[in-house]
Length: 207
Image (tube, rainbow, N blue to C red; front, side, top):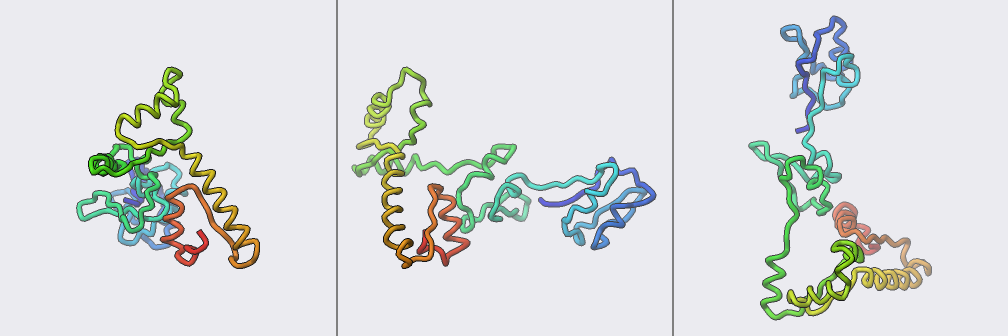
């Protein structure tokens, strides 16, 4: 959780600068050491900044600190909980967790079921795939392998990017340049799009 705590490094100095600087009077002295009242503390960090002995530490859950939209909270036993209504699936919490406790949601089961149902499934791969398997694996070999796995065809993501650029350019010329639309917003990042739609719903028609 997000909290400031006094460590054993506290020297109980006579000036008590941490106590003097606290705007809420949350710090008191007990047994010659500073103690922070968590009910009063507003997490401003002034006590930590002024402590001459660096005896006050800031404890913050890494995943919560990494989440830019406040989608992570704690349950009644202190476990991290992700609010899926707010989450934009950016993955920052996953890469910030020092314990590997957050995992990306796999779609492999849904993929297998879709293939078994007889649906035409297309594989979309990033251009960077060429550098993932070494010089002995050619793009043709990679495409053949994906088809043997059950994909009907394989396309490079860059093709979709080119098509997207053409569609966006056409939209800009017809709508924005003519004044019909005030501005246009665009991004290749799906997390950005979800964030914009969730936090700024008034811009949905401009994305």
